[in-house]
Every structure is written in structure tokens, then in C-alpha cells.
Length: 140
Length: 165
Image (cartoon, rainbow over all chains, first blue to last red; front, side, top):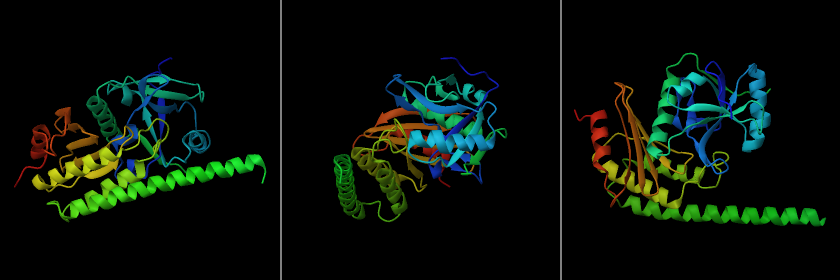
């Protein structure tokens, strides 16, 4: 799978109310907790390449494609840069089997405390990065 | 009713029965823990934390509760999370925020006024912890919880974050 370029922007859909506090720009590390995927035998975190998508298209992708896969509607989406991910020694890999813009945050450490630290560090870095955009998904 | 509809009906019925058996089991276990903790030293001081642990288990005890490949919180994790906070409440006053997490744990988060953050995730008998301090110091580890005692490493980090005045 090809890695996304450093300039690419990513969208992470969030499904739990308490994973984001918009007023304080607080992103809970749980929004970036990787899951073990048996098919690939590794930890992954699902994201989308923002590419040229507008806000309306991002909402549409969330409420149509992602909601169908997850069985529920997203509560927020977070726009972040690939550099935010690589800064914490993770990588972004294109994985277009379910959608052409789908990608995974990969290279998660095997040890669980290290995975926790990476998720926390990523959430913490995003809080202080003004280029990070947090949106409430609005059904149009 | 066609055969296909009948099968769907029977399927839904079985699913409802399984869900309600699960809910009954969760409710019985919680009732036992309420009795255990009402007579413990933790008393009412940490009652909201205890409630948050209960809510974490209720919200996350079913498979795929947070989407594909998320791991449910087990009953053992729920009991151990209560044991952990019970021991913790004897030593510290700072209440954590509590939420389940996708790898099947119940996570406790503390943050102080300097922006230092500390997380302990209870996953069955393991405590997975990570601290990130505002000065860049980091610490992490995995320890086993023994006899409900708090591991010294966790006590050291929390003492630094919340020094007694």
C-alpha cells in the first residue's frame, strides 16, 4: 500500500460525544485509539484522504459511506495533516478497498503502553495545532 | 406471515432475548458491586467515579460497541477498575475522568493545571499507563495489579502531578 504524501490532509470521523470538546479544542486520545485488525494482523486507525473534498462532501461521506460501515452516524470529524501523524512516528497508508479515499494510520507499536502514549501524544499535538479543524457533522 | 418473515421474526426474537439476558446479567453484577462498595472505605467520596465506571461497562460491554474491531469491556475489567479506584481513593483526592476505550479497557485520565496528563487503562489485571508532562517528560508502562494495591510507579507520577500542599 502506498504512503500518503506529507502535504496530504486527513479526515478522522469520531463517533463518541465525549471524544471531542469543541469549546476547549480538547481531543480525547480515545478518538485516536488504534484497533487490532485480524485481516492484516496489525493495529490500524481508519481515516480518509481529504483530497479536494468540500465540507459538504466530507459530511456526505460520513453520513452515507462511513455511517453504513459503522452502523451509526459520526458526531464529529477532525481534519489533520499527515505531518501531525508522522511527528509521532506513525505513518499513513492508502487502503482503497472500501472507498478510493480511505487510508489507515499504521506503524502502531506492539506494546500497549507505547500505543497509548502515541494516541495521547497525537491528540495533545492536535489540540495546540491551529491548522487542525474540528467540525460537528451536520446532516444536510 | 411468509417463511422469510417468520425467520426474520424468530431471528429478532432471539437477538432481543440475548440482549435482555445480557442487560439482566450486567444489572445483577452492578447490584452486587453497589453492596460491596457501599460498605467499603471508598464510601461516598468517589461515588461519581464509581458511577462512571458502571456507565463505561454498560456502554461498552457488547462487541463492536465503538465500531468494527473495538473490543468490549469484560466483567473482569469492570471489577478490576472498581478495585483500582477503591485503592486509589484511599491515597489521593483527585478524581479522574473515566471512559471506556476501544481495546477493551476502562481508562482513567487526570490532568493538572500545568497541562500535565496521566492516563491509566485497566484491562483485566493489567494497568497500562502513560504520562505526558508539560516539560516534555514522559513515562509509560504496563504493570499487573496485585491484591488491589497501587503500583509504586503510578503513585510516584501522581504525587508529582498533585503535590500535597
